[in-house]
Length: 287
Image 1 (tube, helix red, strand yellow):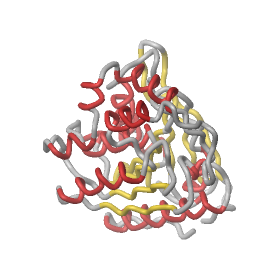
Image 2 (cartoon, helix red, strand yellow):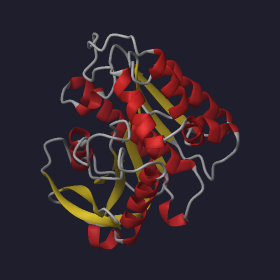
Image 3 (cartoon, helix red, strand yellow):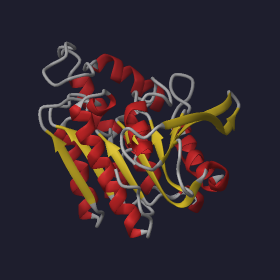
Image 4 (cartoon, one colour):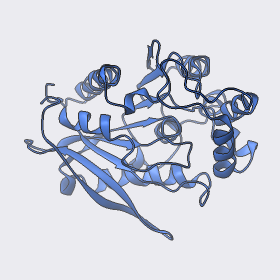
């Protein structure tokens, strides 16, 4: 399959909450033979903004490569606080596995992908103790806020920084907005600390360390490169396998916007997924 492969989508409820059903947008190639390997997508937006359509550009490209991509809505601030968002991501994985036959998906292996705050959710869902039905085989955290407390302190320190886009930035850096969103979702600094992947690694609070592919823009002011390098080093020190790809001259969330830089990032995603699927005896359709 290629980027020109026709991709279709449908919206399905995957969980029921007091506020109503949570929807998933399911992308798939219009024509496929047999069940497809599934990848669950968790959008970014500081745990407060956007919805299941935010990652449409790379979700469609990955579906064109032969994946079933399931992009989730989930509970967010200000109406909902941590760990509601994490519970919903785990519910999304369980939904795909339980309804694999109806969706036209393989029940295993399932992967997770997510950018920014969605990257944090994907990471915690991938490593933290949970039910076997929510377990994943690999994850692709993109420019993830792996340590919410460290990013909160960083954003507070940057409140006087310019919000004007710098070269390479497609998403403006707005520290006041980021600080407010984190306070609304986590409530306090102790909860941010508890939700930190770095803390989980340091304290051994993980069930597994699946292989990761991490995309990090060199000039990301929302999630600085050094912040990502720090937790990646901790993951590797614990014995986890991480492929860290730094994209020079680019800013936060660049792969959400059509263009050659995003396409290069998507090619890396696709290649990593193909390698992980091969470990499980599953072939990703040639792109």
